Image 1: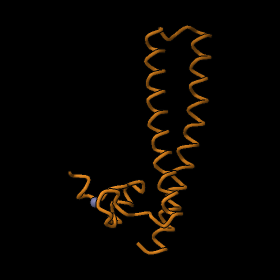
Image 2: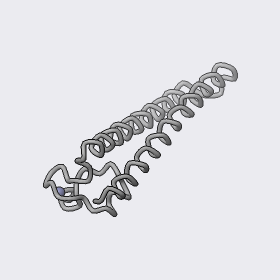
Image 3: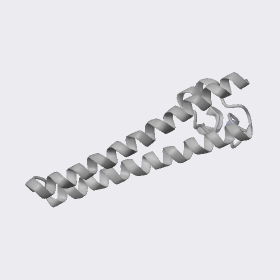
Length: 112
Ligand SMILES: [Zn+2]
């Protein structure tokens, strides 16, 4: 991977990071809205409310894991270690990185 491709990956990672953070903020606001509605009209049953809360927690966990993976990739870019497979050390295919810039394994090692 050349410097230009690395810089493009960094831009993409920063964009993803900003997107996830913005999504997290808007979801925090919408879950507050649900609680308010529920208190006011009592439309949701307790089970519905619990299920909705579980789903929100699960989504938040996934978003958090994504953000950790993105932060890791950004750290590897700054350290000049980005784009190499954690397992075999070979360069990860650029096409694979453009699908998921947080990839840490090449296709071969992923299949193992
Ligand atoms: Zn590998």
